[in-house]
Length: 370
Image (cartoon, rainbow, N blue to C red; front, top):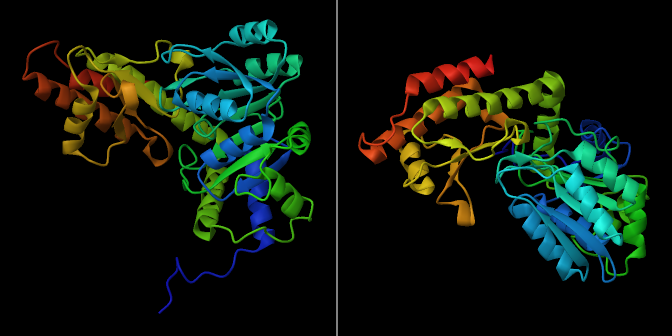
């Protein structure tokens, strides 16, 4: 008995290359695009291990936990690392990056997360790319949480390595990812004797065996279901129009923020300035005396499918994330999430404390969406 998800014909090299071209269009890049057969941490680590080595100096911008991970990888590669850390409730500025580059003229690699879904902030990549380009450093961008949720102009912004995953705003699978690689980045990898070779982390293997071979023979069997799912979500974005998809995510963020402010009860946005808040997810600070993880657990008892999660690590006690991305970037999901949080907050307080206003929250969210 055949099964539509199991008994599939082989994915041809031609179809694989066609999907690459569609990813390149989404990233607004003429650079090579490599689709890697794993979650986005695979190309992120591959980029860092290819671009950093002993003797190099990296500026690692930390606006959330992924920036911290990049710093660890850079140090493991033997690079000298300058961490530019800003509070997680805000974004880094181009002036701060420019100051760090001026203070450390030997910096030749810059790593930045565009949007930090884990903390809810987004960084001004266009302005940062301009100062990095003027300095001459290689620029790596983690755009996993920003792609399809906000503008991403890889070439115009001078991004040498742009890594994406499909599992957030693209509404696709988590098991496949992609990276665009500039000619400067390929040259850096080739000149680095420590860059991964003959390895699952190796981007150079893809260049030598796939790109330079004319994209006629894949280096290994592709993750077929994930590739087909990636193709499907690209088709969906193209059909709706990227601008429409981004507008829907921006509306979800605005509605969630407005609704949370109207809800009251001491719940407030974690990222202070709306302009610095990511469209892909809104983070909220739990009221004093309320455990964020407990509040989320209570809210999910009404509807376990809601895209609510407590912050990770040390943020678990104070941060709530509303992950309004992909299929969850809708007015109904935003409204239901806010009402569930408000009802859970009331229940945990037993009617005492600052009251919540569910009607005001729903009304504010709807108005902000419109």
